[in-house]
Length: 339
Image (cartoon, rainbow, N blue to C red; front, side, top):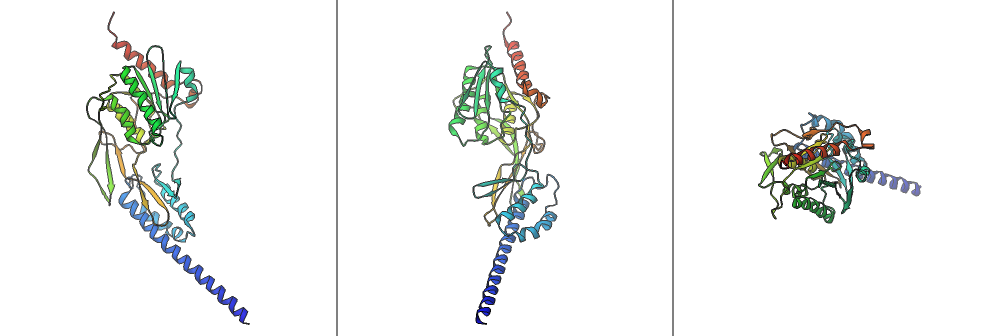
């Protein structure tokens, strides 16, 4: 009899402890949800872009948030609620893991396998750049990212553009596969193409529920005085986003022609928001604007010369590169003195 009573008491204690744990989880989840609501309302720069009723959305999802048995379940619900924003710059961090909330189908108008067939001089520089050229003096530099996780490779990529600038060679800069990174690296390249401080973009930052005044971003000339005299063209496409779209704006402001297809239209300068339960949500903190004050999110940058090529065309040719060469050669021919 005493054994039976002991079993009942132990079982009751276990149930009591389990109930207390669930109550603690529910309380922690509730506090995390409140922090996420506040972050969306006060700090998410694109909160109102898609006219989402966030209050209603949180009311619908709150039972699932509160009922999440562990962090993984909480993250799954957070991914669902945040996916409505369709924002590549919202993601969730769980320790060293990064979990996106939206995917864009990015199809670069670019086929790197063709490059050796299309230019006689080509070589890899570091891990992120390819340089090449043609016998008539036109040079080519492709830069695959502005990310500075490999500083040596980034320095080599910037150096390749500097060398072309010092040589005063007609230049093609190809960033079609580039999805962004550190905007300062992009500015380092653009600095070779301006002789004075040049504004290229604007932004508005959201913090504590308020928008900042409109702020301009500016390229400074290269400190050593290196300047490319032109002509220069930039190859662009639908994979370009974030800091690479800023690069497109820089080069356009510097007077370089943009050739290819419209960019993705995705930027945000995301900042971390710790929910206190081991989950960190990254939310965009600014609205990126062109110099005329128009938003770039979901719109992108339109090239000066549009090359409307189908994906199949890039299996055997590169219509964007061909158009760039045609344009550059016509420019250099017009600049030659008459015989």
